Amino acid sequence: MASITVAFTPGQWSFITPRPIDDLPQKLTKGATFEPQIGYCSTSPNKDLVEFVNNDWYTIKHFKEGTATRSDRRIPPENLNTYGLGYWEITDLEHPDHTLFTAAAIAASNTTTPKVSTPAEQPIFPPPPRNHLSTP
Image (cartoon, rainbow, N blue to C red; front, side):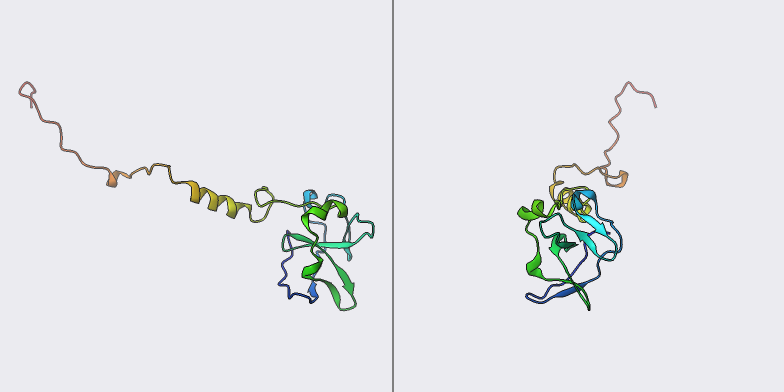
């Protein structure tokens, strides 16, 4: 499983279903530890609970109604080291959207490859003229 997807409403808590198992690549979790039924625990001084949502890290909170986060609880990439967390770029092979990015990039840049014609598309030339020395 990769990122959990959430449609945030600014300023409101969005309930999420935390992942049941530690299934993120080590490149993302780095020093964070996974606790079943709790989630990922960061290495920040407060040992904040975190979850990978919409391909970004967010701090999360457990309520009696469930686990939630908000759009303003996103951890900026420049602060990820403080939390002992990692990130991936779309160009990383493990990124879930990498193949789409690669296919689109290849299609967009593939303007110089010559088209190979099929036999039906190849021109038909008349046979060369026969000279007077050739025999039938």
